[in-house]
Length: 206
Image (cartoon, rainbow, N blue to C red):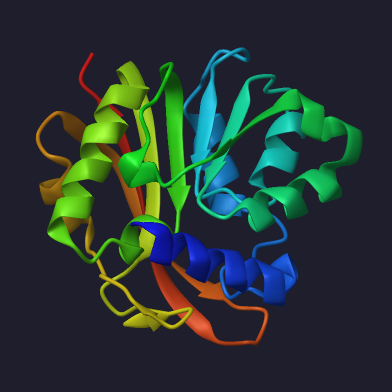
C-alpha cells in the first residue's frame, strides 16, 4: 500500500474515535460465529489482519484463545486497541505493518480480515496479499475474509474500493483455497447507513 496509505489510515484514527468509523462493530458476530465453527484447538494462533481498533481481539481473549496477533498499518489504531484492553493488551502480539509488504515470521491456523482486502484496487497488491496469506497459514489453515459485496459501496473513507462476489474472491485466491462458506450480510454503520458485505471462509490445502 505504501506510505501514503499509512498516512491516510493514521489520520483516520487520529481524527475519529474507533466507534465513529463506518466499519465499527460492537460485537463482530459473524466473525466470531465462524471462528468458533472452525473448531480450532484453543492454543491455535489467530491473526487479525487490519484488526486495528476492532473489538474482535477482546472477544477472542474472552473466549480463551491465548495466541492472538493483530496487524494494522496505522499505529494509532493499535494504540486505541491497547488503551481499550488495558492490562489484557500484554496478552496480544501487535504488529504495525502493511500486510502487502509484510513477511510473516511464523504461521497461523486462522487468518481473519474484515474490510482490508476491498481497498486493494491494484491487481499487484492483491497478488502480493495472496502470497502473504499463503506464507502465513499452516497447511489446512482457515482464511476468513469480509469485503464489500456486489451491491456494496464503491468508495469508503475517501478511497476507491473493489466489490466482490464469492466466485470473484475464489478466483483471486486461487485453487489452493477451498470455499467452505460464504454469506452476504448487511452492516449498519454508526451513522445509520447500510453497507453490503460478503463474508467468505476458505480452507487452505492440507
